[in-house]
Length: 447
Image (cartoon, rainbow, N blue to C red; front, side):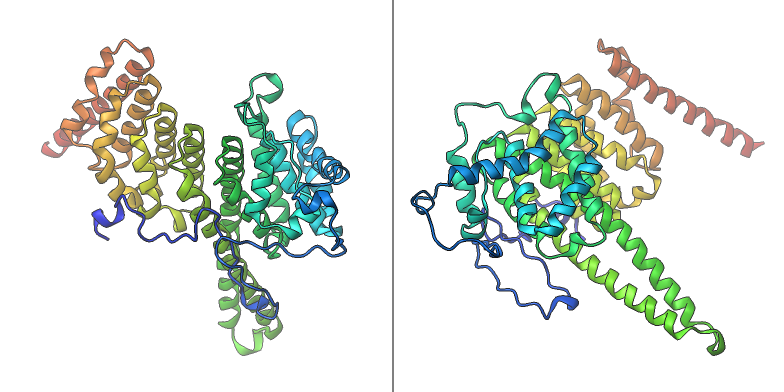
């Protein structure tokens, strides 16, 4: 691949249906018998809710929700929200209880999950059964927006105080445990996560910062958890295929036909799971990440870069390539120090892995100049971590940095910032040790 193609600033290979991204799962072979109507672009239809009334009250005809329905919806989501907010509940138990409820009534379960996101955004609105079955995602989000307090710029993720300190971590833990709890069945049921991600994608495109920030955080962590499950499924598929081949290679008298059929069925199912997970990841990446990694809110951009680092490490076969690394490289130029810092930290976790170095060669040559400039970053934390990153590049690559490039770091040992001076000192010490080692090797060979 030509370097200019890999790191072009245009995303010409990405095709979107619009701001209200249409999320559709790729139908696997075992699901061809199911009849599903394809939704038109920008219009995501929800499955109809069995038992819902067809008649409308005057409030409903105007797009409003009856007060009793609002109270019921808020009560169902309150349990999940309070469990995360308080931090005193065992989230694994909370999720197990929710899964039992979802299996009894999947519409009630998905509504509870959706209203949990709404509450995490600081919105007082509620998505009811009628809204979910009757309205498009864009219409639901529009109604929620009208009920949002536009005068307030505060919402749970940015609130200060002891009770909110770990709220973001709690939300991320909840999402991770949710995916883990669904990894054996519900992750592939063509309703739960497709419906959930469809609404999250719409919220991530909202003009309301609280909706955009909260839904992006949840969606990015959802993606990271799915990537982790995909890695496990890939390993299981590889192992199952090898076992099947070993069984087939046995002599006829020792070959177990039933065992071969069982392994082949398992392998086919795992392949279908791989395709489903690939479809989920592709939908999130194109529907949310491509838009939000360059959001005007720096916290949102930083979240995207942090979670991108997880994808690169957890599933290098699919993500650790120039087409995905380029986003991290581009954001090294971000105006906000927090975003630049997150990019550098992401790269540190990649360069520390020796197995990743060959995949990083093109990235290193393309963005090395920018990284070297960042040792003089106006933000001291960014400069310190950049020097640490350069040390990793020098240690892990044979020709990653030239002598001239290394010399640019040496004067920083005299920096007034103690952390920066210490980082430069460690870099200089490594170079001295390496030079001393080379001299010993040359001397020994001459004698």
